[in-house]
Amino acid sequence: MGCNKYGGESHPHIIIDECKGCGRCIEACPKDCLRFAEKMNGKGYIPAEYIGKGCTGCGICFYNCPEPYAIEVYKKDKE
Amino acid sequence: MLKKAVGFYEHFERKDGSKSKATHYCAGCGHGIIHKLIAEAVAEYGLQDDTVFVSPVGCGAFCYYYFDCGNVAAGHGRASAVATGLSRSLPGKVVIAYQGDGDLGAIGFNNAFQAANRGEKFVCFFVNNAIYGMTGGQMAPTTLPDQKTATTPYGRDVRKDGYPLKVCEVFNQLEAPIFIERVSVADTKRILKAKKAIRKAIEIQKEGKGYAFVEILSPCPTNMKVSAVAAAQFTIDAMEKTYPLGNFRDRSAEATPPARHDMAVKALDELVVASSAEQVDAGSFTEKEFKFCGFGGQGILSLGLVLAHAGNDTGRNVSWFPSYGPEQRGGTASCSVVLSGGEIGSPTVDKPDVLVAMNQPSLEKFAPTVKDGGVIIYDAQIPVEFELPKNVTVYAFPAAQIATEKGVPKAANTALLGALIALDLIGLPEDAVLTALKDSFAAKPKLIPKNMEIVETAKGWMKAHR
Image (cartoon, rainbow over all chains, first blue to last red; front, side, top):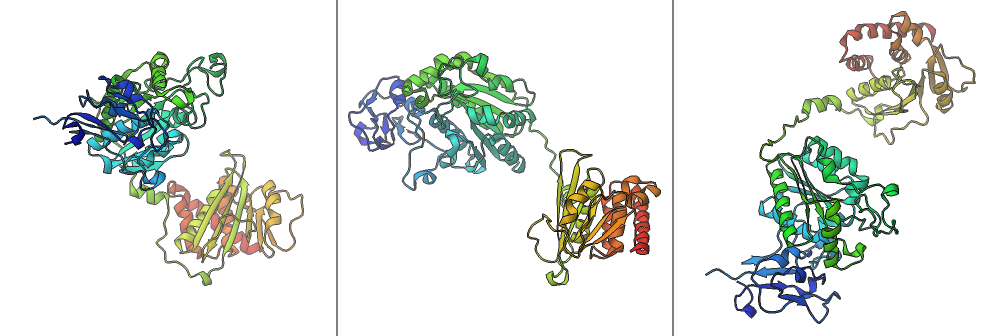
């Protein structure tokens, strides 16, 4: 399952327009694999984005995020 | 595998319509995290269809936008009271009260405290951010010593503003609560502990064991005027000094579901008298308006109630509307009774057809209000030092004297009922009125014969003197 972009690897899926840019996920990520994006989203916030590698699918960003639908975490399927 | 929010509506239609997916909370607000944990616990226990969520007043006022379960919005501070009602009327369901520190700690503290003391079967989630959020950052009961807020610009001075209210510690003095814990959503470690406590509290509700209370320290970046991350750090560095995290109590292992004595339907029927009599046609019964007045303790309200019951038992629409001061005895009391064949517009009686007065001040007050052609009956012992209206029939009736001669001075009201019957002022069959009188003594049947005797004597006097 998950988006082909990361070849089935664990990764966060940030719904850019639902992110309010609070930075809690960036602060919380134990692998430091989130950062602020360069462009603001439709709502006017600078959203978080995935640096593209390093995610272990731990779900910590999901629980730190105050928005229900701003972040989902895809975890690598166990073989 | 996928980690995503569960237990919420797919779209927050109540907020901004069918496309809405974002909350109304500020960036970095702790509410959203807490919402996620609660919604997830409810969904994962499969309780969404069996849960009623009570929204508070405060930033959390719109919880019903989000949680996909039953929702009720309570008045300010009343979530625990509303949750009490829901919990009692919906046995077997899970009830969640969600309250902030202004809602629970200030205006609603007594509601929450008494519900906890009664051990009501619901869970109260208490969101403590040490400040008033919605109204713009004023001092809350939970504001920390020296903390600057909009209303404590030099910091909270405990000598003047009091000390932060430690709700968990206060509730922990009570016998009834099953579970009390304080958690935080400031960082991952704390969020996971909060998740566990919230799940436990929901589980206690699922098993119907009793009252659970979870206080959640939550960051308010907007009113702290700092970033989301700094606000979270404030809850760790500053708030936890005053509000230490931890479990205060977990009696869930030994707790058994409380036995509630459901109110018997029979008891309710006795309280609320519903008529089985056939409705009387509106045209065949002219509306009659009565005012009974005197001082509290004379049986004014009871006398009116007998008439109302008699009317109810014979298919009339009736209203009985008491008015009395805070005193049980000694203050002035009056009641308005309307008997009608049709619908009764208002239970208040401004211009009575019949006025029954048992003391001087009330006679003086209400006599001028009686309709032209109406009737005033007052106790003959009342000194009348004022002019009674001209266009009404007035009877000075020795009610107190008759009752005293019969050995029951307190039954002057019964004597007045006899007078009303004798003058045919009630317009109902006499036996219906007498049955209602007997029913009024259902708890003290010994008094019935004497009261019937007083009615007969009163009738006899009135017939001889009219």
